[in-house]
Image 1 (cartoon, rainbow, N blue to C red):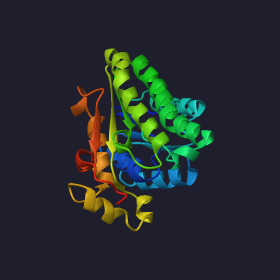
Image 2: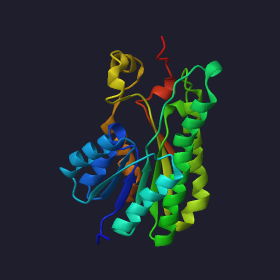
Image 3: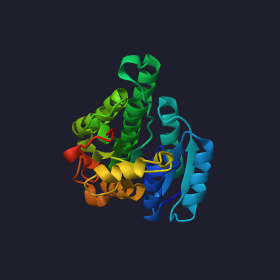
Image 4: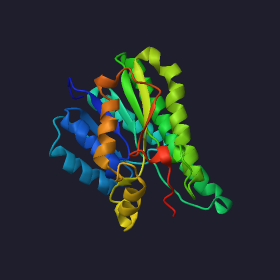
Length: 255
């Protein structure tokens, strides 16, 4: 076990994009990091990158964050290596597009398993450790603007993200007595390596976003880092939309 006086943070879906940027900010603040991605190569590359800026320990663990058995393994790594777990960001998720009339049961249940189930059981397992260690903690879930505004071919995904927000709200009654706060964030259109594959993405979302541009991963990650910080300890059960004002006026990206 590593003796330390810093906080220990576990972030899933952190091999790239928003998750990796959350890791970078927390690592630069001196937190010890457990970084998860389902792809081993992404996990290893991310750990290498973060070690260049980290002020604490950085450990990588690859696997399916929607699997309750693997969730136990991740949380066990935190407890075994550091003796505690202070911050958990349930960022991992999948998007399976499909027309409502033809959407398959297999795709529906996979989206629910990873997004809603993975978040639920990571929260359950992590909160159990936080309760036992009697020093509180912070949970943060990654939702989406699709939980607030309809998007074509994303009915199942939107359901899963809305469920995540309700989970954060409901857990207030379960976790507050243990000094554990729990919130969610709902990113809107964000420039990532994945969205960069669409040549029209930035222009489309710059045109219909009131702030004149889609978000960067830094925009999302700085918000996440605040919500798991000491400065946000009295914020719980809340969801924060980070979309440059898009959901306030909701112009369609399809026209």
